[in-house]
Length: 124
Image (spheres, rainbow, N blue to C red):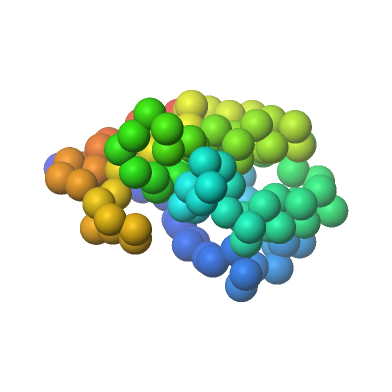
C-alpha cells in the first residue's frame, strides 16, 4: 500500500520570514500554554501575521499543556486569532498533554496527533 502525504515544513516562529507564509495552502500553528493562554513568542508571531494577507488560507491551531481543567489553552487563543485574520479553520484546536513543565508527552499523545494529521491530510 502506497502512502501519500503532503510536503511539510516545520519552522520555529522566531526563524520564519512571515512574508513566505503566503506561499502555503495550510498553516498549523501552535505552542505551549503559558499563564493559562498563549506564550509571549507566539503572541508576538501572531501580531506579525497581521502584516501578511492570509485570508481564506486553511489553518489548524494546537498547544501543549498540563492535564488540568485550570490549565487554559493556547490553542484556543491561537485559533481565535487565526479566525480574526480570515483564515478557514479546518479542524478545531487540540491540546497535547504533557507531564511536568516541559514534557514528555503523556502516553497516547503522539498517536493522537498522528491521527489528527491524517484527518487534516484528508481535509486538504
